Length: 118
Image 1 (cartoon, rainbow, N blue to C red):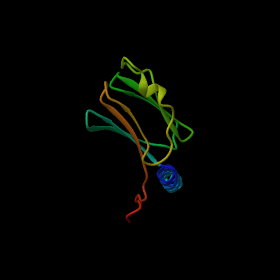
Image 2 (image 1 turned 180 degrees about the horizontal axis):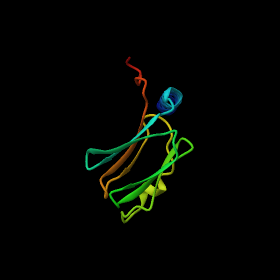
Image 3 (image 1 turned 60 degrees about the vertical axis):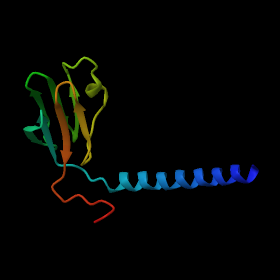
Image 4 (image 1 turned 180 degrees about the vertical axis):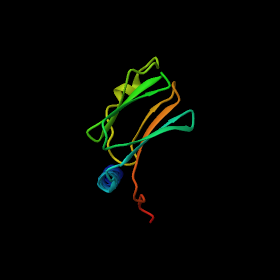
């Protein structure tokens, strides 16, 4: 029984190390974004430059703030307000989603994205 416990512990440590390495690599490979894309019910509502400070009202449902290279949501009409509580985003590939309002705020980069395959 002790042998099985030791093997399980070693397997757990190995999995934790690999997961930590993958998370670190993923965070390191994210680039700064350059464009904010806002979609409403699956269609592009607007695009904005991440370097410009602007406030965008999305069809009266919520307001998106772009300031100092960061993006966040305020004044959402959704009942739970999770999109407001999600905080700010600034890196390419990050997003804020408000399901009740049907709004997705995503940061994209001009340069191609690379993953572990290419």
